[in-house]
Image (cartoon, rainbow over all chains, first blue to last red; front, side):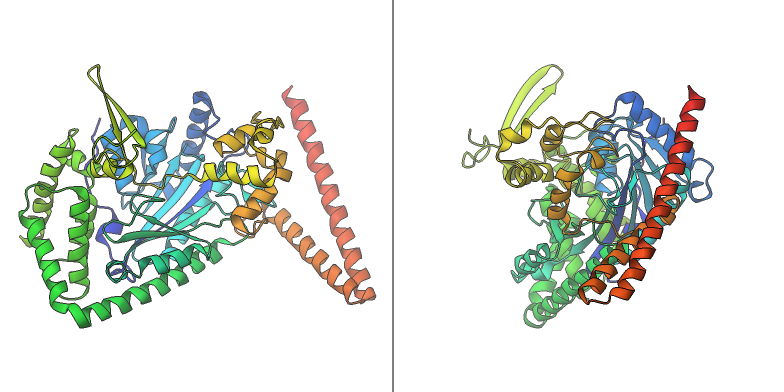
Length: 350
Length: 187
């Protein structure tokens, strides 16, 4: 069987609006089939039935013609972890799903998870702040699927999902933001704390309840019932725009006062990424953040967005092991990481 | 138990490794576990929301947790009991919502603020949902007119509501007939 290769999704190589602060925008819609128990209660036979139903609903359909159909069982643990790190599948699908599968478009903008917590999760991820566009992409696939399948839909409660937090639109929209200036000026908690009061959720790169590392924060909607998809997406976008403005103000203030220090920080980060021989994940993520800020502020022109995004993904443990084609101990990962970072930098500077 | 690494924090993460039959155990606090990259997999949000539900359910609907666990109301399709839902935080099938509606409603209201879906509707359900949404709107208007003592307009609204409701009932009866016929054919 063909092994999964490490490649770059379009959200990493492409560019989008507000790309200096917003790395990517993602939406996912949860859907279930009528008259089939949800995956957590379903037997192996039942999840297989659902898989086959969804497979035949997509086969030969115009909107799905170039999609790859990938069964979770065909992947090693490392390959699945790498897919999680590229935000193409969820941890749940990687670890716990029975008859879990992924339908993936070659540009990796849109994907369909089958037998996740819900029967179907339709996902779109785009570079920069493009929530409306992402919802429109996911919505198109949803339109094709709803004509082929009987969705579990209630007139009052909308799309029915396994978890009550998704009932209604089933829509979770989220934005990955790089907020180094708000972190450096210790304003981050004030802003992010306020977000939870307007029905939004903030998480670190590692998920809920984790601290922000590499100055990366994910902001997403919490409410799915009582608001339309358009309202959810517009609300989130407008709040994100306000956070962007605050981050920009903080960046300008830093630039005015500490231009040399920021430049030094960015160049040191590049130096360490180029020359270090042992590097942990958190350290790498921090250097990439410093370098990104230097690039965004025009203090270091030798790197670009694409390289920074590539680094951000390839330093993660699953992707490292995917490239090494074997399971690595933590020490081996810390040795492998600088090698892969150097390779990427060499390709860029060649 | 204290964390084996820092010996300062309580160990909350216990990792049992089995390498070629050799078992080793590691007891770490969260921050040390992260440093060790043992939590490699934790890229997605680890929803602890279902835990939140149980506490919400405890406080709102039942006197205490025991009372909740003793609730044996079952979903007719998948046999999930509401007590089981309270423990795992996941519903079992599309019939669970109507089955537990009275109990889920306050929970949904607390999670989402709203309790009625106003977003996208699948094409197949659109006609019916539009009618129901119109009906709700007319009922709101009716209340308003009654309050403002505009009785003539209220009477018009009442007639229109009746008309729509009769229409819905007739359609319901028709689909039930169709269902019965289909069942008959299958047997």
